[in-house]
Image 1 (cartoon, rainbow, N blue to C red):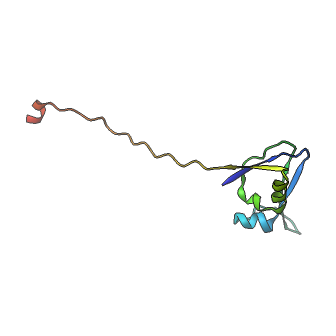
Image 2 (cartoon, one colour):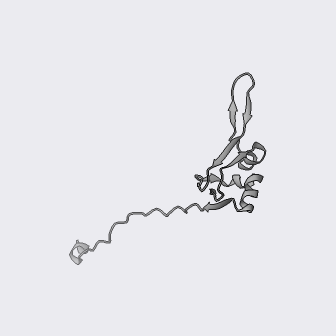
Image 3 (cartoon, rainbow, N blue to C red):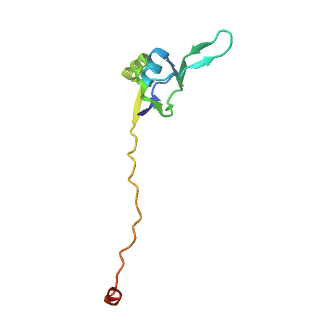
Amino acid sequence: MTVSLTNTSRRCLVFVLAHETYCKTLGECRCEIEHGRRARRMARSLTLASEVTSPALDDAVLTIPEVVRAVKRGDLSVKRHVPELPKPAVVATRPPTTTSLAEVIR
């Protein structure tokens, strides 16, 4: 499921999507990998300007302690996106045919 976060405070908010919480909850690593001699994993971050709504995010973002505190303080509002159920496929059927008595007797 995905969520959108809206910054309801009057200041810019920045959240670090720490590997230990965010990536572990997702079940896959979303960190940036720095290449080179000192290769290391760098956590991503989420920056929300005042009165801005984020695009759809994985609900794992709600496991970040700073996000939880901001929601409790009222600095962030959360909107859950419920996935739509797939609609059943429509199968084309042929219209019923009528046969005359003369055709049946043949």
